[in-house]
Image (cartoon, rainbow, N blue to C red; front, side, top):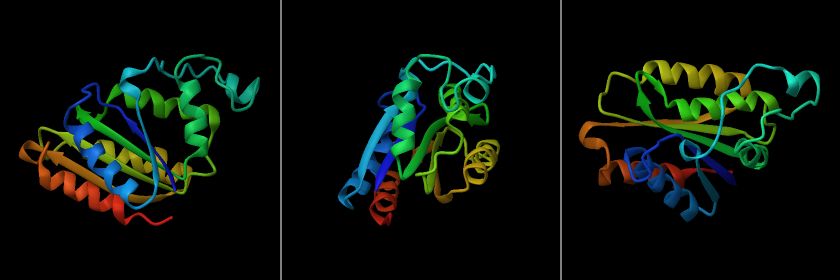
Length: 174
């Protein structure tokens, strides 16, 4: 299975990256191909709602930035994993921009599964991000939610959390 991870954390070696590393190791041990894109360090602008992608050139965004690299990766993926720290009860703005820009390609037909990985300092902040994930990804794309994983406080950057994500990655079936 081809798995694309969109990591929205601006911290290259932070809590979210640690969880993604555990997942990636497990998924690769199970024979899957995993590509991690750190969208927080890419030049991805927000959607302008110009409708160019729907009215002028179907599936083509008028903005020419780093999403041009991400589009074919999403379209080729069997699974997309969204990873983000939680900032003020929601996914990072960087990941939000990438998600919003998928509007131009509509629903990626190859994607059958998605998952959500989130890190935070508090256990009480995930609700809005989970709701957004279900509505804008799982329900809209009509895909299987393979799992939602959170870490906060001492669970961040912990061997136990890495192992949990490793086991999740390793358990994935095509």
